[in-house]
Image (cartoon, rainbow, N blue to C red; front, side, top):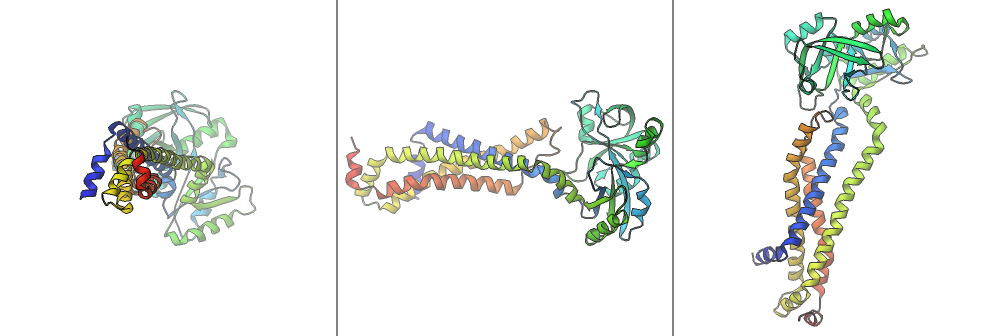
Length: 385
């Protein structure tokens, strides 16, 4: 108890220095937590992918299409339960800055394969019956103020022209991680238009989504599908949904590694700053430490006093940083909803933040502790006066 009181009294002998150090640690911990969360979100799509969904695409690249005639042959593969298909549409709303994910899909099979897209029975039925109908995620609808029944016009890029859709449903995600910034419409609408305007691009899809009975069958079904179209003009590559997502994530792997390095550099920098602060504090109190030794305090006692102060300052900054992480994450989730479907800080990130703060305190306190504990009484008393 005596040591704790002594540490607390020493903590704010230089109030401005201590407060600035705590704030510095808090900002570093906050930045570390947000950067770690950003990296985690980058992999969220792959982490939440279904084990019973496969994606079949052209083996050369996703930009090359596959014939729609592959559909029935894929359905016939043993272990397959449902098959749907679609195209990345790549259109925007009014201006190019209003860009979001939009797909032309086969609706019945697609919504069966993606039960996490929650629609009311009426909305789902209206979507199925309207060839020009579309559905959008709740976040996307809020962004542009859309409501059911609205006419939405998109400007095509991959498929040029003005494309009109009637909003028939607004889905919400079954889980927080479900993407709610997507527009889905009928592939048949796209295909019929292409037959009239660009016949050579008709009757082709970008990918097939394949449902399997159980995850254990995924490798076997994948090989069976790809073997069907081996040596054809459009060979296929079938992989799990997670592997499909990871193929996109891998394109930006260098960026994610850079962000992770920056997050650790932030902690390293504040560690140096905190170490310098504690060194200054120890240097100013050399005379006091020598006096305490003359009163019977051992080197270990002084070590614990100095080390405890360093850890307490860093942990205090860590607690403040952790507390600030939640409102900061909420602000990002609200203000930057266009870029992040959710920005939830995990318990693992909180633990890493606290461990980072503790590490700063431990490392920054090592040298001042050693210096204070080993100071000779005669050398220390020379500093007095």
